[in-house]
Amino acid sequence: MISKKTKYAFLALINLASQPNGQPILIADLAQDENIPKKFLEFILLSLRKGGILQSRIGKGGGYYLALPPNKISIGAVIRILEGDLAPVPCLSKTNYARCEECRDEATCGIRLVMADVNKTLSSVLDSLTLADMIERSKNEISKRKNVMDFSI
Amino acid sequence: MISKKTKYAFLALINLASQPNGQPILIADLAQDENIPKKFLEFILLSLRKGGILQSRIGKGGGYYLALPPNKISIGAVIRILEGDLAPVPCLSKTNYARCEECRDEATCGIRLVMADVNKTLSSVLDSLTLADMIERSKNEISKRKNVMDFSI
DNA sequence: TGCTCTACCGACTGAGCTACTGGGGAATAA
DNA sequence: TTATTCCCCAGTAGCTCAGTCGGTAGAGCA
Image (cartoon, rainbow over all chains, first blue to last red; front, side, top):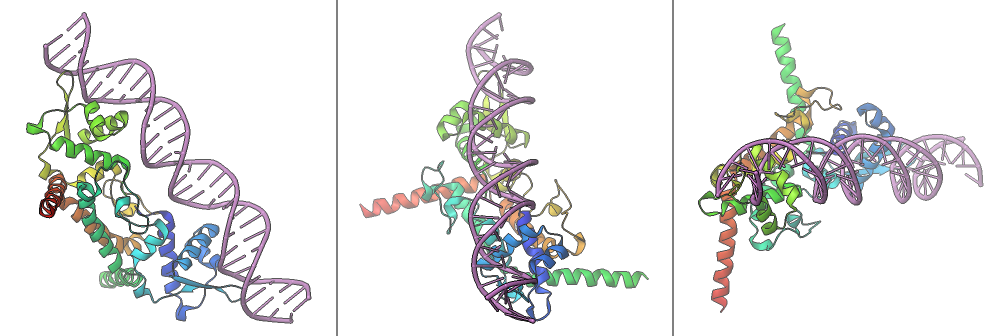
């Protein structure tokens, strides 16, 4: 289950992506638009910037904007920045490796071997989906619904 | 990331599966064998029993045993019992549905639409892998290593 | 230079969850 | 009837999540 923090991040990213020619948006405006607590959003955007997904400008006319086009921002990258490595067991994490205390022999651990498969599948699906997909699918649903409405009238 | 509870559950299930002709094992023995706090294990086994994965017998000669053959126990089922529904967002959960407060329109929410894909992929991989796979892969690794050892001697 | 706008940053907090522990009760076999 | 074993509820230390508070520092404008 993804945290609220990550959900807020996606809402913010979708909003930023819809901004024409990547103009900076203020934290305060974004917070109001998306109904996200301002101080919390501040922290989220900062993390995304440090993760290389956003860029910022300080001072008048400043704000946040995407560092990459939406189709280059994978949802896996966003989740990894905000939730940490998504490995199902710590002994499979590349960035935050930790031995499982309860494990006698890592190399032959059945849990680890099976979870490695899960990890691989999960990573590949999360890395193949992007912010652009989120936006496109949402648009598709909206126009689909609109057509149904028009038809029923 | 799966919890310690779930990891303990897998260790216990692997141990129970290795028992010849499904003889019951005591909580206490299992706890000692696998180095799991006894009272905590008690609770875990109880959950697995309620979830239909284990059966138990009270009194002398009692204990826990598998309710199904290992190849019918999917790791998805185990995780769902111990961690709850594995949907990435509450609005996709079938058993514990909850509306996301921050979501304006569920039907056209891009986060939900993309996460539905993730959910599907994750479910299908977790449901396709079983306790039997865990055991088999572990055995394979052990014999692979043994061959290497024999060869190097 | 000073003023205002904006992001940056560290410390703190309440609620809820994780990983347990303890004490007793109830079913079963001998 | 007694020993054995699971069943079940209540509680607790420590951690994480979802924020909040108060101040700092850099950028543009006058």
